[in-house]
Image 1: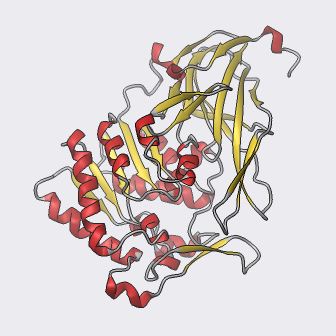
Image 2: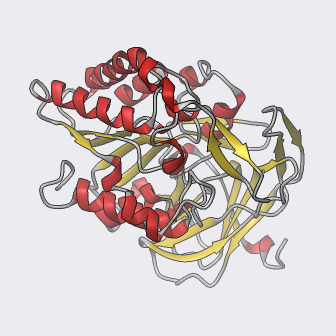
Image 3: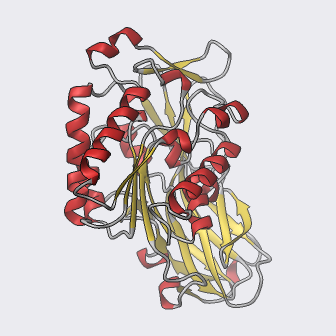
Length: 394
């Protein structure tokens, strides 16, 4: 603990300090933000989904203060894979009046060790720690602490050298922003991004001055009905859903069931958002699954973790799904519905990350972009969705 800790003001972490979450859970250690409500979590089908749901991608603390020192006590739960090097500590990004000002991590914490060959996981418990930010500008300011997008974070307490107030008591500099709710897979969740404010949805939200609610769940964008009901019930000014990659990864559906599932997913969203701009985004380019069905499997043959598709391309004729098949189906579905739903839009994912992008910025593990790839995806998405003539243009 730093020497000046006794002079700091301790503030319990309460829900009114949070943004980008849909629920909180009170644990033995503190407050755990969730990106799904409790009723939906009770319908989660597996531990992997429960793990990624509790990883707070897009979730941040927001408050007003003159403090020059901010400390956040937290208990992280990190994810590690059996046989691979230990992961780096998750990054906490601190923004002052919307600008990235400092970054740090919290060492220690719990570690969930996953055996990728079996899916089994073992939790190894560890201590809580402190994310400390010092030498902040002394004037009254809007502060956001974006939580690591790739590790579960139980929030314990805030300490500051000046009082703080929830951001809701004073408007942020860019207050009155539209609320953008986005649902997608691990790329939307932020896999391989450098920090929580550099996932592609966070970058796109900052560039477009919108308030992000990120419902990107690694490996788990599978058209689950509880997810559609969650979107239906969540206030939003703009909604996008990126559909397809996880369905192929998991070999979860056939063409016969995929189409009705998409229609049902969109029907449910429209029950709560009948006229909200709704953008359906088809899969980004992913060469290993363009024309080869899943399931996806880890591949260590190169000495590093990569992924490969294990299905038989010949079985597309029998309804096995590939990214090419899914893109064609989504384009047809949106075109069929758009006559009765002028606020429903389609975006071919290859305009967000396509052949030219892949040639310049290939996917290091064959399915996820690197930090530069996240920036490219964000820029392309902003241009097509938020730019002039786009469905989200202001």
